[in-house]
Length: 391
View 1 (cartoon, one colour):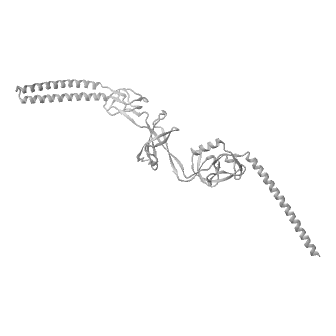
View 2: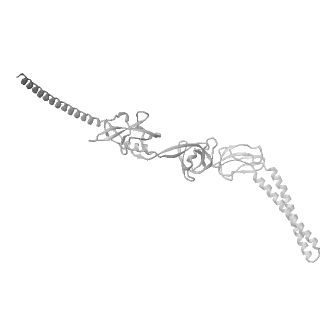
View 3: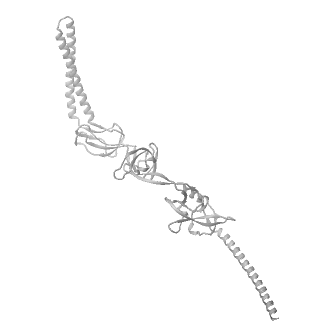
């Protein structure tokens, strides 16, 4: 009897415990449902406040690294000019900074001695010309007399020889006058090309030797840049092709004239000569010129703006991706990245990004993985992102 009552009590206890468990389970489910409803409400409130701008990750199989080399601007032609003959400098007609045209007289030697010599030689020529004319007339008369057997054959030969000698003397005197005329012409120094006077080395009253420099000239309006580049990049420059050159912060497109076939003994670089067709008067010989050459690196990845990056661990970086969900809500996911190349305001990265991912472009300091956000790209955001990644 006692054992029967005990079994009844055990059964009753089991029934009560089962009922209690069912009750607690229902309470827990109700609580979870309430919490989920509360979380959904919170998310709905959050998405109305936190909005993010994104850009689409586009895979690129390679990227271009810009390598810059520095050189100097030079005049295409320059010359230290002087007289071909020595003498006293009588006049220098130009000053430093003056512009001259080809053929302009820019300096003059004193020609008093040359003028006196010319007068003497001119008189000698006149005398030689007169002697030659007399000998010619004499030869003519001897020829007529010989026809009448009035003179001997010997006399005619001597008259002919005399006429030839006088004619040669006349030509020699004429050449002497012409020579002195050339020397007088050489006493005038003319500009060999359109130029700017860079330096005036001597003034009037100085006696100079033949070939001594008087003025230093720079060709006007024709500039070129001489830039030493790495020998391995010679193939990147095509003779006659364009080259991007930066001078004083301004960019110019030049034409490659030559890549010299020798290396600099010190730097081991190779000089490239680039013609600059510019009218900018602010450019001067000696200005620094920068040549930019693009080198393609065959490693795949993605271009991202610097504002899309956040620090990660072990020297890596990360970006946040907004994965679209339902009701216009997106969830933030983290992507680990490695920077391959950095420029002023953008980087080329590789990592766990996938083509088409919506990468948050700005404001990453507000984000964390799992956060629910709404994607709203303004026209300004889109334009800024495109400009930053395509420059």
